[in-house]
Image 1 (cartoon, rainbow, N blue to C red):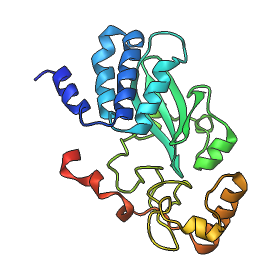
Image 2: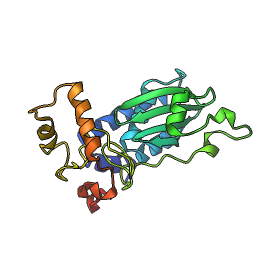
Image 3: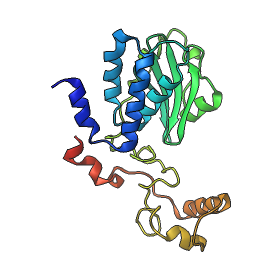
Length: 234
């Protein structure tokens, strides 16, 4: 069975959003990746084919090649992860680029050689500027490979909060501290605010205050939807 047939079989089990992103990346790669590197580039795409964070990085890179010339991502390394946000080093055939990624979007932070190295970003992730660490090698030696998070039970599959961290407000996996149901589907938020709908920032701020007073329930692996762990997804 050739790879194109295997890929077709795998694609049929994916959501429309993921499949659309995959097809877009493949089309962009046809114009960006040197022919002799295409197999390796596609192998990396296959690794992250069901990982939203990885796909967002690949799509961003191939949509806007930083150097404006043919290039390809050969590795993605994890610089830091905190509260559903990921700081990633994308090692290419030419250099290394930094991206800040979350479920909310993606930001390009320049080349690794030049440095991120925004102090606010460094402080958020609790890391030091690699430029201050004399005698160390590049990102291959400094940081581990970024592993797809979709099947990691320690990370929320929706907002990417880690075990013990609070969900992003509005995450469908978060549990309600009042009734124990899924917070975005129960009526507790409306009852506590004495409203029928949430329509403004002031109401969201008040809701966050009420949640804080009651005590939000942080992510735990047992909150993970059971269908994500069925044999069909193996």
